[in-house]
Image 1 (cartoon, rainbow, N blue to C red):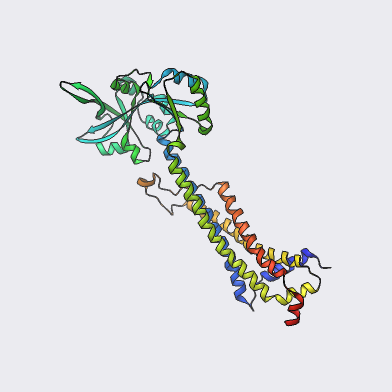
Image 2 (tube, rainbow, N blue to C red):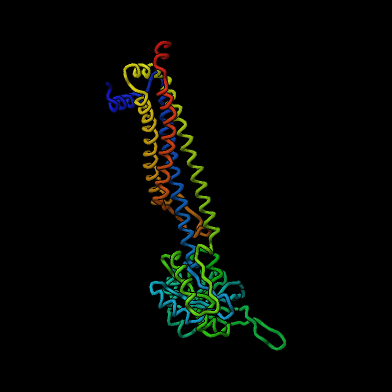
Length: 411
């Protein structure tokens, strides 16, 4: 009785050797090995880049799009009592109230439209790292001495040719009567600092000033807000809790939305693109696995007499099937391991050396972002292993169905 494990190992080693009499069979196996390896490498690298780009865009969107935002659904706004109640109920969250108004900025004979946010300087700095970084280069006492002080983006600075302590005139959409007509309110502000979000759209259109300044321009109570920005580490969980809390707090109408709701279409499109790319690149591994099938079938056709002889000597069909199944798996899994090693090398090179540079004015970054998630990695490995197993099974099944008597009689 033949030892199954010994027989399988012997045959696998024998059939994996380069066959000088039939070099095309060995070359096909090598191509299958390399094809699976390259396919796995490309898929892992592509998923790492896609995931990195998604995380980078998400990070950029968080610059001016906060995890959670409360907004007033009526003209009465959000009162300070609501803010105090939420702060007491959720001490682990950070809140920053704001007032917002559209305006046209004018300086040095140049004009640009934008949005002015009135914020509590200290509160905003806790949840907006870009704003906090700008404050480190600014004397905060200036804001307390002169409530009509502003921080503008680097884009607006370049557009309006601004410097520190420059004067900037803001024309607001709120109108006031002047004689027989209405004119927009105009107010001169002192430029006290500049922020750089890395996104041109924000840097040219966002302006920050004190809450009291915008309250005076809108002629409302400084303790009434247009909305409240909220920083949360678990916004998808906290949004439900805050909604429930708002039901218990007397208010005139307050809505809440998360960052994923504000940019849902964008991230849905990126997720769809990532899935499509995964499927397309997985086809590379599938095509490479066809070489496994063809290589095994050629080995089987070339070794028909050996297989028939083994069957006549007592080897079972299950043993023959197992041998060729693991022969194909050795080629395929070896290719997968090669792909993993190559992907690690490629990702290290891309992350360490500036081989691929990105235009900063388009992406806000110059270095290609790399972030390989464990989910993407194991999905690639599991998908590749399944393809290799399926590709190895059919030839192994064909080998086990060989009629030994017919082969030995005719050949």
